[in-house]
Length: 464
Image (cartoon, rainbow, N blue to C red; front, side):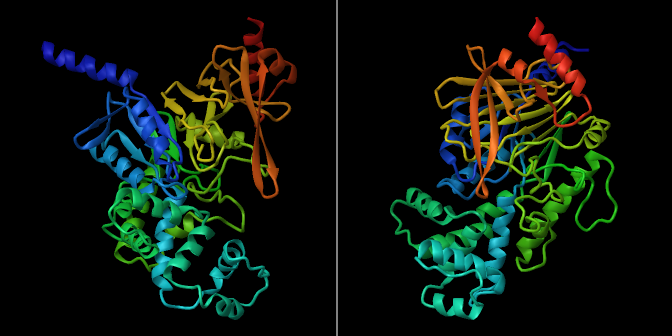
């Protein structure tokens, strides 16, 4: 073997040995935090003449939901496309429900252009008029009466705003308005200009549509699966339009990705066609989740507290060599969170509602996950979880239903959290606990299997 080949093999082995997966959860239009994250991690990202790229053989996984609530959706999509174009093998763009929603919005705008308010938009119109125009319209209002009331207000711009707000994107129109003013300082930005810009972005050939063509429903790297929402017993192995449930995780993800891309391309050719991907990603029966969809499933209980899948299902995943699932979609408050039981974990990355100015660092390798973010106090919060031989409390739930997020750097405190239901919404509660206090409360795991080992490992750690 030549010296040059030997050195090359050593280089490749070294790169693979130290390569890591870097994860960013739902950005939802927050370009400022995204750009700051790229700049602050030069060991992973580099900006050159053609834009940003991933360096050193690492992987970058964006967990979906690029757009909507902030004033940076256009720039986020452009930056993600730079990363994908410059580092195609090392950049994974996961498809989120908000991303698919844009194809749905475009479909609704095109389908009902120039027509009266359709029945299914009655309540979104009523809610919008009550919230923004001072009306007090009842739920039972007749469609004909609503159409008469709104006749002087209704136009394409108004309808787009109603639809966006009805899809939990109330700030999307104003955010696009503000961003276009920034991008085109010499242009007179009007509501009509914003409306046309949205439609041009969503149609075939538009920037956002081209972005969707680069996305995938899921990704597998080593022992970790990445999807936007959740992998559940209800959706595992199922591909819309197919009648046989796939048993292989790899085959299932590959078929989901092929199906997703086919659906997107078909909608580009005919935005009015019935699309299974639009149905697949929707909520079900008025609930905030849809566990039949990997885009809209959630790992949480009825109170919004994070919860692991059942033991039988985890055993099935582990039999395929899967020890970890990383997701976005489910907001977990200020900080990313690991859910652990023995040798399996779920990582929740969606901090889109966080008030912390910095995005968290989420670093995944085959053996462990390292997360680092900043507390409101300015202190650094660190979490490190290992698949095997894990003897720290990070990621576990306590008997008082608090969940251990991580350790406050340079202190003896662990940061813990709990979510409570609050009039249809959720509120996160945080506090600090020492190891002794955690031991006094005791650990509780979400499932029975492995609970004894979990408690034993923790006891061993405390006794050292």
